[in-house]
Image 1 (cartoon, rainbow, N blue to C red):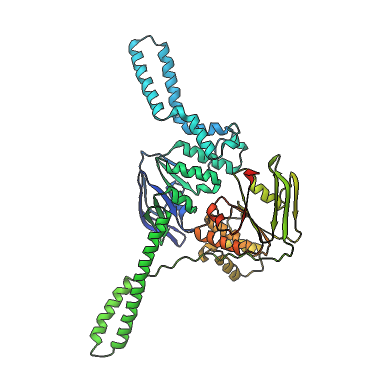
Image 2: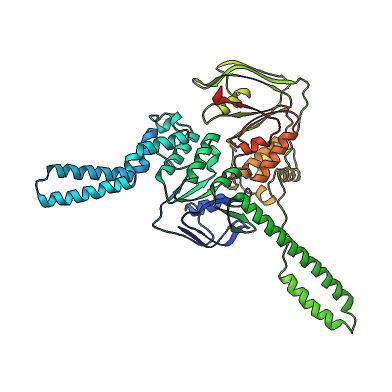
Length: 516
């Protein structure tokens, strides 16, 4: 279906991958993994034609149909939700129009030869429609719409009335309805709720085509893929099996590789020692010269030890608060023109942690913004301790100027910091020296998240509000974030669609807005 030959690509002076050779065959269900900034989205953009590679070839099987979720493509906003989804079957709809026209001609024809010709065409078209499940279109649309939570938008709602996130979900639904031979998806679970992720998981498990998925959601990958493409050490290596199998094989390889590196290092030291002790002695000079050749060959083929990547050092500074009651919420109703959810009641004590859950659109982000004072309650009360100091992680972090570097961004918030201090705190947040000097627009979603976390780490607080903080973060960063939240002495309210991450937050209470 797809062949990648001798692919190489760099960003500035930084090589992402070199001389990569890979194939996607029918039935392959591939997870593309790598640390934040390793080049996952770059590869997806090259495969989708949005970016040219530096060298190499990407060869497609022209007979196959490829589907790619482009979140920025413009769609007809005057259409209703149902009309947009129905357009996934535009070719079948055109075929049915042709079928109906032939049947109309057939009903009017008096010529026996023409009748036979039209009957043959009508039968062929009917068989084609049945073969492609045309008469199940409505049920297919209903199944996918329900599975992804689109039914709640209202099938007669115009696309222009949807939020940006709802439009992305709608485009995703259409893509799944089109049933391409190869699906290419970049972080598809980021805009889905837990129940919709479960539905997508089952859909992909039963999917007859192939797919390539970028995801940091490890349990999701484990359940849907049969191969892993891992970006590491300037290459993309293929592993058979799911993510856990890949980790097992990778760790074994690293262990063997490092044993070889250590053996070579010991051999090199012995050779150097022998040469140093015996070069000046006439009796042993010939042997020392021979060992020097062995040393030279060893150094030419030297294997360097592979060092594990270090997790970010995430620590949220705490501002002490004496009162144990931080927030008391009673019969709260939140929303805009009308309530999204009401009768919310809970108390947050200092040091307690609460996870807010529920399907998309139920009001999770709206609740957070209401607590922060960015939105007014429709009714009910929120009593916030006067000594509460918020730290807020926003889901859609919007940088004012994406041509700025990460260093520029931190300097704008903290002008008294030296460049050396800024570099140090960005490094602790997991951003390499080179990435710190790149425009923010060129950084991956995960790297941009790390800038936001870095800024949060500079301000003491006693109540953290986090809205989907794990979107785009790699496994190391997620683990570091969970560790930081567990060690934080203050209160925490977080929204996350990832059960695996939530399980790492000790003794947290859950409030499911969908069940209120």
